[in-house]
Length: 307
Image 1 (tube, rainbow, N blue to C red):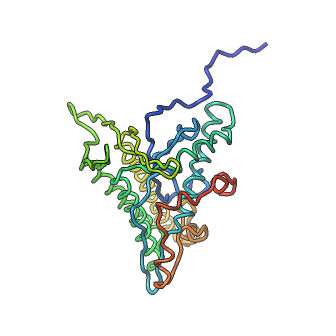
Image 2 (cartoon, one colour):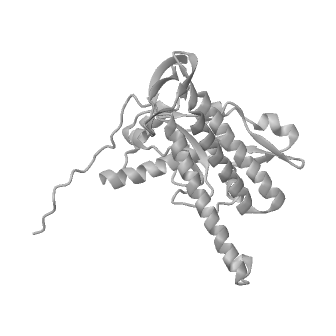
Image 3 (cartoon, helix red, strand yellow):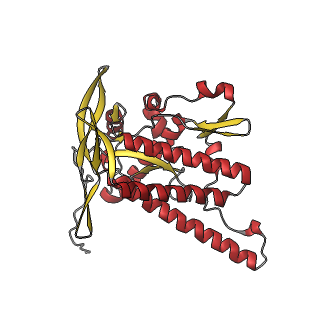
């Protein structure tokens, strides 16, 4: 007979109901275990696995860029759809690993129905998301004009690193609290140690067609810490790819033989219709208000296995 030491198996991932769990996303540059390059940030799955609401962040304005006579923008429906698919994909995978149980569809649906009617009142995070979307389209333009994928992705990566460092150094975030716009400190320093602050912000909820304001708590610095870590990793990987390419050139091996498949091409987002092209005349009708997108996404849109 074989015996095993008793080991507690979690049936649920611990969570605090007072936690607002605000999420943004970014376009990744290095391939990973995620089926598509639109990644949640921070990568929190505790709310999903417990059927509690997440606060999605929305940009306040749409983003577009002109390349020659063409205007490129985002299909915000696909942008959020792929972001949500990745979040659910990772939630299922992690829940199974932690609890040895499949995450129930009814739990995911409960999370979705609670989340889609909420709007987090954190203007700074909306601005952050706008910056990410603009920086990626600028990198896309650079790629279209130069055909240098590595340089374009490195530029995008460096911009995000600089942005995160600037945001952390500023140590200020704007939120709405009791419907007043406030600037709050994100962390304090004591004896050269950093201590993240936690505080509440307003959450707008639609209940039977009427807006209600609730309050949830969050740790504002978390997004910047995680985002910075991701892009420092991306920077390291891009530098590694460049070094390997240079080494191969020194050995007079053709560039075509360089294994740079780890980089995610902009063509991937074109193929998935995340980045779309429109003429100047079509611009206004194509750029749908991103705040309305989440209401148009159905549960079946994000639950489908196809990613």
